[in-house]
Length: 423
Image (cartoon, helix red, strand yellow):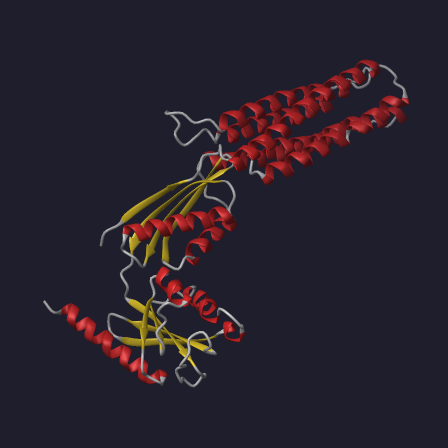
């Protein structure tokens, strides 16, 4: 049996939707850079007025965030570039940026821990408005981080999500500074213990960012929900019989998919059209798919499924297709010519005023039939085009009873098998 491989490349990220996503991500990254720069200035000013070592350390922390924002912008810009040496793009640069951010989070944790253990505390008194200003700064990184995570999740940008998570973690360090100031203001030395606890939480958050980014760099599989969604889309195509293998991996905010499938048709052009159809459906369901590769192989049919319209559950074959109340799904072992299984399906389209035949046909092709029986020819009717597109053979029959038709099919299969075995 021959095998054909069809590769469908996605449109590059420079499509309209890709440009919109990149523009949105860059805009948020610039917001992050500006806010961090303002925070550095404000915290240094407050530290100068109060002589607070904690505020000075937090200003240094925000200064590190400025470098993280610059790295974020550089990563987003580089991740969309392609060259002859990197034909698959530089998408993983975003994940490398996320790792850099993770180490900055680790450094921040160590910075807070060191300050808690070895800091000398406040060196001069300060007025109450400094405490109010420090409290107002607590909400800034949380609001910015929440916004970054939301936009990063929408456009599947790991570096933006990582930067947003780091900013939300900054709420803890900023809170430590505020409570340290508050404790010093009322004379309670509590800030060192709180700083140690927060440093542990910050380090744990950095580990989460590092772990997620390393999974992508090591080509770990896409998440289970995304894989199952892609699988259901492929199997929903009427020409696909089964999936032999399905793999997917993340690269930056993009997804690469590869599937080995068996199809009914052995015609390369038909398989190519089916592949393009599947590609389009996957893109509708799963965002940011960069490349889909489908390896195609025609199936060796050892089992066949027949569909017969029924007038009643007792097995009387209906003279009409679209108006039949029931359909019988009959599974046969084609190699031995043996009937194996029967399933009855109600026809919800029978009560519709129009398009009964095409609605029934669309329902049936999802059951992957090989042959459709009908008393009346379906030539020129909408149902015929649905079945032809799905490579379902249409046959007419004069039988009125399902049991007699099953016996007829068994005899035909035995005859066909014996003819195939003749030298």
